[in-house]
Structures are given as structure tokens and as C-alpha cells.
Image 1: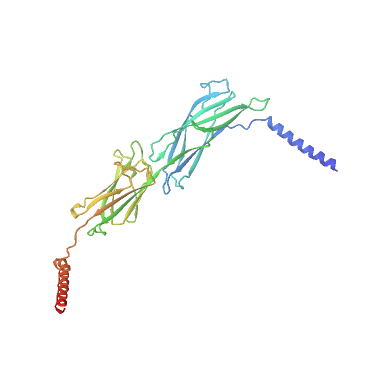
Image 2: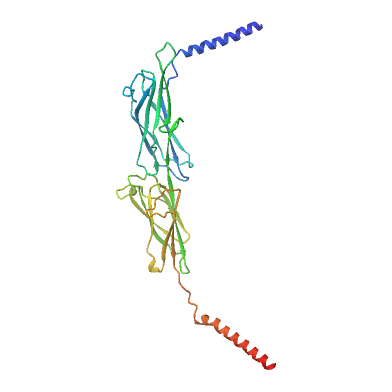
Length: 335
């Protein structure tokens, strides 16, 4: 019985060994396409990345371990491709990933074929386009002996970087917020007064603002006109009213957008106006998670207390001094 069991086990092992050998003599596990992924990340919390089409181009770099030359390298069916991302919100540092499959060229000779994949820079404000190209290596080797099949193996790494392989290309959308605050100072500053001011935004040169810049005005949610920002003038002005202690927050402003806060002239009402800004440059630009502008109105003066109240302290002092003198003289006479 024991001998029969051993025989059965040996037979099974040989059977599986036969299957493995047979599999090795078949076709290779050939890679016929490249799965290329694009990750679209957010730099800051509370922002929404605009929809974007990312375009890439493919070009030949060279070939080694082969009898063919660079010019003889097979080309991709298309030398450009596009990956589209929709508008999305995510936690800062994270993002959405979209991939596309690209058919690999057909090869007739073994070798290590290298191609460069480069992202074409777009013009969307706030989007950091990837300037570092990716080197795609397609290693073409023979399959098992006795066949004419070739095996394609792919790997990618950043050009100019180390040998670390990558499986995606990352882009980042950076946008911040602008806080405009009103502060009223001085004994005659009216803290219930609505002060009018204009906030002007200007798109970066050569860029388009595709994001929705939002804000709340007296409880009503509003959006900055993107069409005006992308017009020939590339500017849009928003009018707001603020009382002491109130703040309007503009959200999702792409990095590179310029801004200016200008209050109406209240000098005829006796107010002096000054601006306290987080950005000390002449041209104020959104380039951080938060920018602030506090508009300070000051109106001082003096309180007219009247003649009686003005001289009373002195009269009281004189009376006390006179009474004290009388007491001293009286004591001297008694002595």
C-alpha cells in the first residue's frame, strides 16, 4: 500500500512537471500594451482642481543590444496621446489617477529600445505641468528555444533621475484663498458702517483661469466671472461691503493670479485708511495657501468735557490748600 501511494505521488509530480515544461516551450507572456497612468493632485485643502486634458508626445531615443539603428526602431502607431481628468476635490497631497492603454510597436529584432515620453505644457493657471520626461524601455528578448516568438518587457523611469522605476506621472494643482477683513479704530470710528471696497483679480500672463473662484457676500454664495478673467483684459473686479470685524473669503484662487484690494475714499468723513497685507510686494500674487488683507479705518478726535469739568479739579485743590492753611494758623495761635 505504501509503495502504491509513493508511486501515485511521483506520477502526479511528473505530470505537473510535464505541464510546466510544455508551458515553457509555448508563447511568452508578451506585453502588447503600456498602461500609462496620470495622477492629478491637490496642493492645499479646500480646493477643487479644474478639468484638464494632459497631452504627451513619444519620440525615439536609442537602442542597445541590437543590430538595428535608432532610425530603424519601430514607431508607435501614434506619437501623441491624451489623458483627461475631470474636476475633482481631494485631500491635500492626494489626487485622482486616470490611466490609458497604449499599444506597443511590433518588433522583429531583439534589443533594448528606449523611448522618451514628454508632457506638453498647457496653459491652465495653477497647474504644475511635469517638465521631467519619462524614459520608456522596451526590452525585446527571445522566447523559448525552437520558436521565433519575441517577448516585450516594459519599464519606466524619470529621465535624469536615479534608476527608480515609476508607474505614473504626477501633476499638481495649486490654489489658495484670500481673506479680506475690515477693522475700524478710533473713538469716532463707526463700527456699524458698511465700507465699500473693490477686489480685483488678474489672470497670469499666458494662462487661463479654469477654476471656479468662489466667495460669500452677505450670506449669498457667488462666483468670480471666469469669462472676464480669460478676456483680453484678463481682469475682473468684485465689489463688497464690510463692517468692523467682518471678513470675505475668496476660495480656490489659482497660484499666479494677481489681486488688489482698494477701498472707496472715506476721507471726507474723517477716516484715515491703511492696509495690512500678508504680501509686501508691489504686485500681490497668490502663491501660498492663504493670503490676507486687513483694511483699517481710523477716526479719532477729542471729547469736549466743558469749562466746569476742566477747572473743577483745580478749584478743589485750592479749597483744600486754603483749609489746610487755616488749620495750621489756628494751631500756632493756640500755642
